Amino acid sequence: MTERSVKHATFVVERTYSASAGRVYNAWADPIAKAKWFSKPECFEFRVGGREYSVGGPPQGPVFTFDACYQEIVPEQRIVYTYTLDMGETRMSVSTATVEFLPSEEGTKLVFTEQGVFFDGHDTPEAREEGTISLLEALGKSL
Image 1 (cartoon, rainbow, N blue to C red):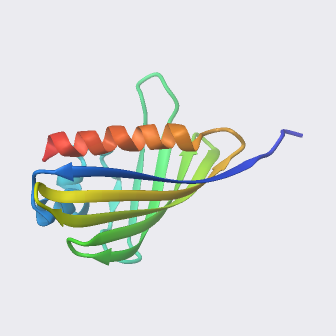
Image 2 (cartoon, one colour):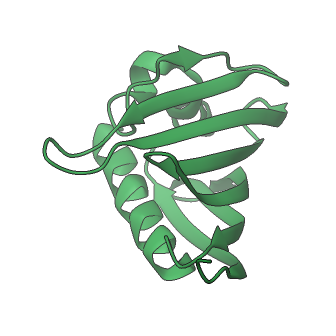
């Protein structure tokens, strides 16, 4: 039998963008805008109870599946979603993510909080946080 493990973790990443809260929020809410910095979804239902689903990965690498359900949406203020991340047939993690859009003198402060459960060493909170930082940098470039 394979050794099983569970690791729980929370991390927070903050970024300030020189764009309005509406513009930053739209980069999450509009599938065309989001595809500029995140994977292009096969399914995108941006509403409470709606689903976002994408499959992809590097050309010669593993296939990753992101499967999210939107739990709370307050336009230009916050988005809360739960999601699973799989590598092939292997469940890597289950998470709750909260994205907050806060006014700042520079434009909009985005606060991304993830609470995750990472399974069997297939992923780590540190790697996920690093990936999130890269995504939020890509978001900034897309704005």
